[in-house]
Length: 101
Picture 1: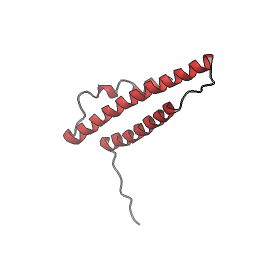
Picture 2: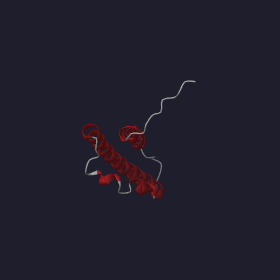
Picture 3: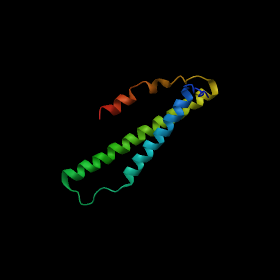
Picture 4: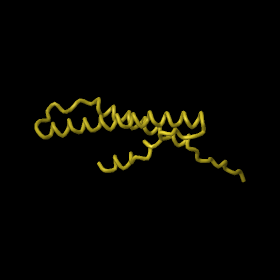
């Protein structure tokens, strides 16, 4: 009976997989932003649509910053085998910030 080789969890691998997910999320947000607002909308409907665009753009910028931080983290792990000293940004409730929406 052939045995399956067990893959060990590594921080670098997890970071790389998270990077791929972040890339996908950022690309989806960019696609959403590239769609022009409905020109027929007016009043509160138009205001809500523009507010949604603003929120999406702000969230995309935050994800890009997280992607950049993650890239630095991966580089540090690969070079030194340690997390960088400034990893406090990864424990400040990023997920909680988005779960409150």
